Structures are given as structure tokens and as C-alpha cells.
Image 1: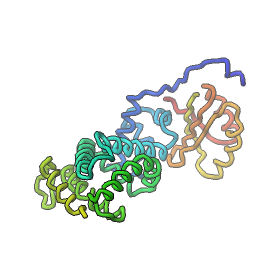
Image 2: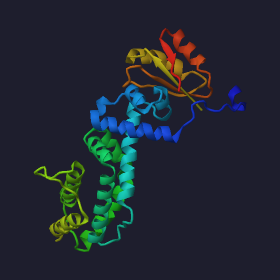
Image 3: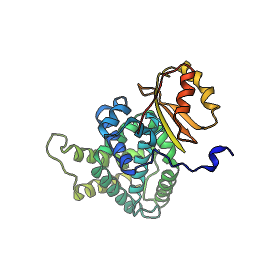
Image 4: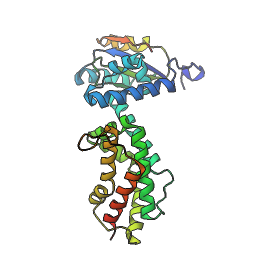
Length: 207
Length: 71
């Protein structure tokens, strides 16, 4: 115990959730526009109309900021992906919900989608994977193993499964968020297109 | 807990090592770090009290430039 133990002094640098939200939003925008190297605390402070010191109330340093953004984005995606989903569903039911949820998330948050793509191909991606791995992996593993056992899904190395099961969806989302398809014609990902693609994908994954 | 943010010239590993023992042994410091990705070599201190002058004095005495950044 020391002399400070008896004195209550309020923290002069109080946390403000609104300011924190603005800082987070602007940081993601800056990273998407200029890459990780383009993010500086000075520029971020200016864009967010706060003092650089304010940013350090919420984040230890620039790397901590990037890691927190990446982990929060990944957690938000996982939470959204599993909305209304259960590993006990049939493979077709579960995939339909996951496809719709993933599409909803990335279409509602196109900047976050680009940010997460950048994270995936950076050293931060490894950290994010480790942090969210447990919950996500357990649910997906149970879902996949049950589908294989029930002969709804062929047994494949995970990379092949993932490429077949989700890459078509992500390409469609990319076309949608870009606003155009392969030949630069306007493209909108409708429910009908999504369901049609899913149907073909499921056919390819059946034993 | 109080967060103090300073602009410094603690720009190299050698300089960081020089302040490490000072900061580690300071009775009021809970945690500290220097943002090595920032041009202003920001020193962030989580402390038991709100008196920044104590830290400015401590780092200044060690021969480094230090300036409090206001929130």
C-alpha cells in the first residue's frame, strides 16, 4: 500500500465510446486506402479530429490498434456467420445460412471486407487466426464431420473443402461490392443468384 | 489508473534500453511502452497518479527530450 491507495483521483483521460468508434472507423478506412504503412497516428488523429494523445488512451501503439481492429472485425464476422446457425443442421441448411450471413455481412460492410482481406495476407492475420480459432474451428469442425458421417459431404483436405465451399460466394460478393462483373457490366448479388450458385456448389460437394 | 502520453526523442533501441530501468523501477508506473512505429516516439505510461511532471522530470534528467501531449 502506498500514499495513493487512500486517494481517489478520477482519470483525466476518460474513455469516450463515440470517439473510439470514430478512430476505429477512420483507421480501417486509412488502411484500406493506403495500406498498413499508410496508417500513422498523426494522420489518424487529424482525420478523426482528436489529439494524437487521445488515440493512445484506447490503443497502446500503432500495432495494438491494427491488431484490435483485425480481431474485432474477425469476431464480428464469426458472430454474424453463426447467426441462426447450428452445427446440428443438415449440411445444405447450414451452408445456406452461412452463405446468406456471410453475404449480408460483407455487403453491409464493404470497407471492412477489404480490410479483412488485407489482414489475411499480413502477419496480423496469423494472430487473428489464433485468437478466433478455437470457437470458430470447433463449430465448423463439428458441422463438417457430421456432414461427412451422414454422407452429405465428401471427405476432403480442408483447403480443398474451403475453396469449393466458400470461394464461389466470396467471388460473387466481390463482384457485388465492385458493382460490376467479369466484363465490367453492372452486377448485383441477388438471393436468386446466391441460391443458384449454392445449389451447384452443394452438388459438387456431395459424395 | 491514469494514462500519460508524451512525445520524446527516444528513437532507438539503445535509447529505449537506457530508459527501461528508470521506468521499470518507478513506483507509480504500472505499464509503459514506446510506439516504435510512430515518428514522434510516443511514450505511453499507465500510472497510479495523474502527475505527469514526475515522469517528465525523470526522463528529462536522463538526458532525453520529453513533452506532454494533451488529450
